[in-house]
Length: 169
Image (tube, rainbow, N blue to C red; front, top):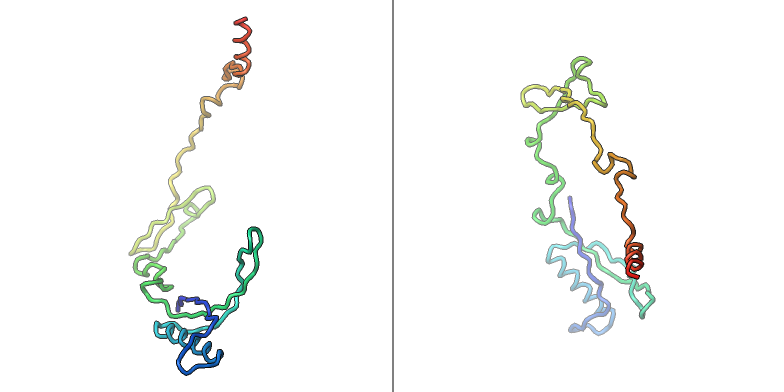
């Protein structure tokens, strides 16, 4: 079963109500109303928790404030979250695969990958994959020669400016 949870801040002050004079009675009534509202919506009360909350204090510091919350849960509806069975495809949609190995020539080897083809009527046989002849890779054109042959004689922009300045004198 899957549950969904709802966390609400716990009331910090009792609300005024007819016939309730003491602060404890007002607080208990406020808490009771909160629990009954959530129960009417299908939420089951679990527990009250006190949890830390990091908050800014001034420009550069932080402080830890402790917050009281109420925890509720209910069964997750089918439309909101999938059940465990919904995560997997139906059994009829995935055919069972079985493999038989006949002889040494069809045995799986690390350098010879095999293909498995499912067959509904007969058990699946493991067949060696067709191997293509390896092609020799040719290096890119910029790597085929030596560095001195390929590198054009380019002077730095600073030196060319200096040469231009000298020729103008």
